[in-house]
Image (cartoon, rainbow, N blue to C red; front, side, top):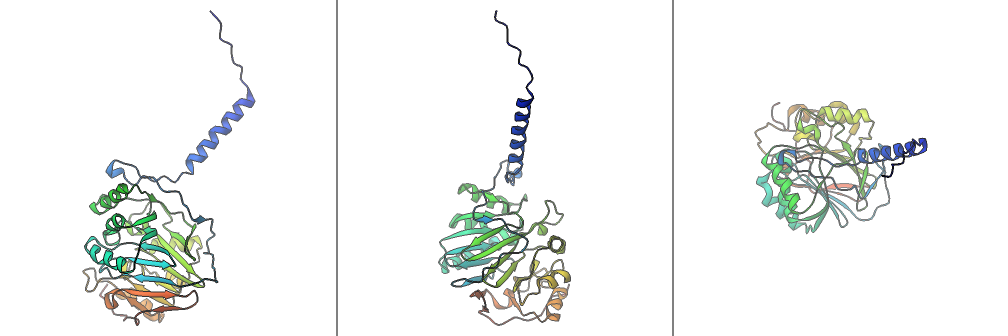
Length: 325
């Protein structure tokens, strides 16, 4: 019987093996797979972040642009939905409630939308993602941005199933990275933590730049998320601010509003809603700064157009009227 040759310890081999193991661990740690479907017993991984460049805390400004950036703050009642178009590139931020799906799909059809470069679900609440499953079922898209969180609601489950049926996945946004949308650029500013007691603070916050014009889209981000963005040192200044959480007292803190210093504000809110929004606290802050306010409860869908230098709206500003806090 042949004897096995005893292998001597080789320090060089041990070092090489250790380096290989370390590289594997680092590689696995850098994967951005996100388990958003524990409640459904399945795993959804993120797409690779294509069209993304490394960015600093300030969004790159490209002053020479051609054409128009068109932003529609769609009237979906008590909810949020925003269509952004630049050239042939399109992005949809949120989709209102499930009850507004017919109106939303009709609006998108009227705008001759063929596909989306990006669909963004800012967070799990029904008044933001309620009709996004219908959008997914109807349109092709490249990337679906969604925070690393989930919900046990039927609304969230419907969205997940719609993505599965199209063999699509959520993409978890990376804070500070920049994305392209035609000649526009946008940067993800929030959420900046992995766990919150309020689902609103998981809201994806986006700063979009077109030429010298800037726009901030805040979902339902509350003062905690606003404070985190301030602490991160992001350049929050913007020409147009989509007021957070439909004008609730939980958002639009003084320090945040001072940092943004918007020329215009837009509030997406339902007429005579049961939540008493927008509130006196928020509207008085805007009035004190003489910021013109455009609001879907008074003016319906609001179209904002930028040529890279000038910003125009299709309607006159609304009032500073409020419901009691």
